[in-house]
Length: 350
Image (tube, helix red, strand yellow):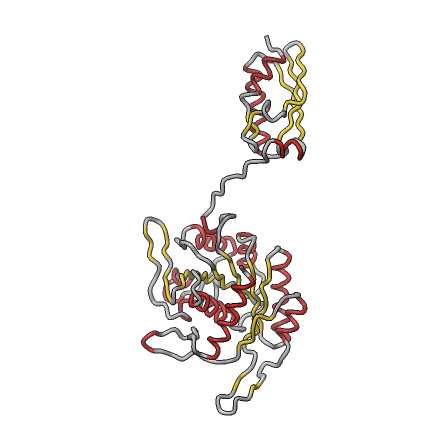
């Protein structure tokens, strides 16, 4: 015969999934009524309205009916904050994803983005990555500009990643670990995938690549606010962002959209890099403002952030034996500007 005592003993076999304690231990058995074999229960859980509640509900019905009840009626409510605190709080679910995306990961993600193409965003990404590595940091870079991948060419990379036991090992150059869509496309073929396929490819860059321990992972995003940018904003809830613009008013205006998207998705904007800020004559030392002035300042004012640096028009010194057409060396004047910007990034991300 089913009794209140029998029901309590049965409920000791049912655990609150979020607390990993049985319902009697948690004080979750609020009310028991037994009448002619019919049992009515009021149960408090750490969380209600979840799939776990449905599991608990089914388990209660099974164990109570197993003790002879002909029917089981259930009502649910939530344990109070005070009760949860006394019970030691809820168990944190074990993180199932790759280590680099784990909540306790020490990697800082820096997404480099722009409102429009042609402002030198990839050049900035590559030089920030190589400069941070030169400053002693462990750095990786993902060429997430799926349609306009260019990082391998900019860094003078000709080899391809190795695949060992279903894990992808990135190519390393200038002490930077590199993954790019360009590694997986034959003969520079165009990419004509739609959004969902792109999202899967990006996810693989995090889940299937052996990054090891990194201080920084730089992400060269496509320009604008399309599918790839949205996917990355979702995958990386704590990413920091650098916006690249030129001094031209239109570039700054369009870049503000990308900045607004970052703010809406709760990403921290580290600052703005104004690229192609001026041309400095080697002969006279005079600066010519080819694309106008003020774009970077206007953008920083609108987004309430800092101007990390202004990079002039220029070209790295080309070494045919160690070819990397877009990487500025430590002694190059523009390389020194990148070093100043990188130092500011390190200070801001401590």
